[in-house]
Length: 529
Image (tube, rainbow, N blue to C red; front, side):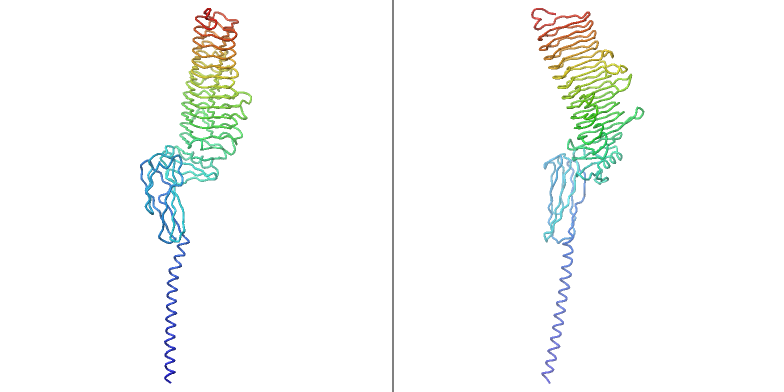
């Protein structure tokens, strides 16, 4: 009996032990579950961001960036760095890191830098994020919008660092920005392929990052086009520091505009356009400087840089124009041309440019007064400088100064004034190098002064034709076939020149009343003439 009782007690104790053991196991299991499941959840959702995002800073302005991390398993490791620098180098900023914070300072200008953060948790899981820090590059520091592309999408960022336009068609983005602001627009490096032309408005300033900012429309006519009227002018338009590629255009120019006051075109590379490279008409107070224009007027008669008039108060300086094609006419590097009767273009300086390898002329002028064409190089064209016979209803050119130019190896002439019926008068051709052309100087215009030029290696050095009261003085006329030819001229003065040519020093036919004095050279050793 006692054995039975003891056995029952033992069974009760055993059951209690088993229950206790089960309870302990359950408690342990629940605790492990409570610990393990959240850990697994955190590991699956590691997230990180940098604050603030897309910020603009000036030189010597400090900004602290903070990392916000969630998920994963602590502790976290923070790895900060700069993964992209545009228009600058590692010397343009300082970066001081301290775990989840970093202090950033621009110390000199650049375009922007991209700040990167990589976070690694205790399990080795990692995540990377970045933000862009703009400025202090001059173009972007004052820009109301910054436009960028990755080759597929184009987006615009406003002054607050927010993306406000985003599209696959860059025309949509760029035109929306133009329409939305009168402030400067900065277009970063990249190739932009708008589906049609871009239309600046008054007070538009478009600035690229240089010739690596490429505007290449996928179709259409002209890249930039903005047309005012005689009663409603555009005002204050600037386009500079970018490349205009007209490869895909069906017609049109790189830039075409009419009736614009205060136009600034600077540092453009314009090429492969069907018509002219840069072709504004009826403009006042303008400058076109430091541009390269080549391989233009491919299918339509046009010019490299062509100003239609009346235009006035302009400067065209330090540009290079090469390989302008002539379809039936034109094909000139630089043009100032009257487009309306009874009104001429005036007060325009063309200085320090290069125009070469063009089917037409280095410079071509019609209806121009008070114009300076100085210190240019017009080589390997049909003419160096050319004022042709043109519409007789147009105002005649007058008071043109052609000085200090180099006009060499042109098929026709170094300088040619060909407009008897328009009575071009008071032209000065002075201090030029006119070498190895067919003719050095040809003038059919009255009251032309040809002074202190070096004229060598031409068929005719100087050819005066049907002109009166012109003066040829102080020139070096050597190594030409004929030095000076006069035909149907009256009362011209030829004095103080040096002649040394292979055939005739002077060949005259039909001249009336011209005088020769104190000319020297090969023949002059025996006598003055």
